[in-house]
Image 1: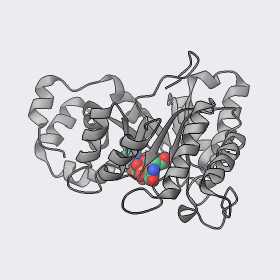
Image 2: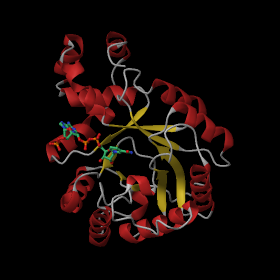
Image 3: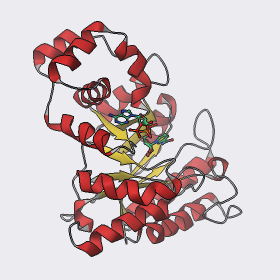
Image 4: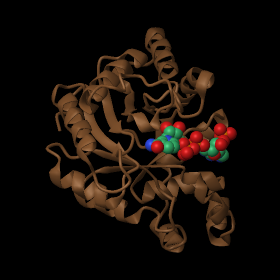
Length: 279
Ligand SMILES: NC(=O)c1ccc[n+]([C@@H]2O[C@H](COP(=O)([O-])OP(=O)(O)OC[C@H]3O[C@@H](n4cnc5c(N)ncnc54)[C@H](OP(=O)(O)O)[C@@H]3O)[C@@H](O)[C@H]2O)c1
């Protein structure tokens, strides 16, 4: 992986920008001011306002308190099936050309000349990887080789697809971004494969597990002792399990709380106490 000296470090937590529409710029400005140094977005107008992310970044760059090298920028190529009518590339073009057009449009939206990470939002088919997925992946590899994205990766992928991708890719994924607690197995097979292959695992919708945490008196007692909210405990437990969390909170107090747990690891005794209590 050709990561240059000036690349920003991979952050311990990512600020997610989905579903914020016109509020995107303000949320990203608040997240950057709170201390987030990793931003996740997508060139998918249906769920993300990528240009709003760009406006927040440009404002911070121009004000001089943030440099491009200090912030890790990740976006996604979303295939046509994941878009609404506002497709940010020629949907009639071949998949590899769609990736190139989407990438150029992302650079323009974000106002930058390179990305730190570019993900395939999800394979184009439910099982296995087809010709379109491979054309997309080859285009991502090319963008990486040309220095357009320091890392490439994939989202919403199952264990068999990930194994296939790792086996046949010329440049294997640096990141997987998945909904961790979608199934009771907590995406264990994908997480294990990531650990084995040195792939960074990013988890979203982590707070879906909150009802289970709140119903567990042992977990709640650890949160109480630490002075943490149940959400903070979830993020901390995820960090301790090697999951890079995404949070898309709009609340400045939650932003601070989510960042606060980064440098407060659970002790070995606490981890022992909590073993097996969260999937
Ligand atoms: N790859 C994909 O397909 C995909 C899919 C979904 C999401 N994502 C990414 O993941 C990001 C996060 O999405 P998400 O699904 O995890 O949900 P989220 O947007 O982070 O929403 C979290 C919800 O929990 C609430 N909350 C309460 N306490 C919180 C705390 N301490 N910290 C954070 N939130 C708290 C938030 O409310 P407040 O706003 O009031 O705090 C919000 O309603 C997205 O923005 C996107 O970047 C990717």
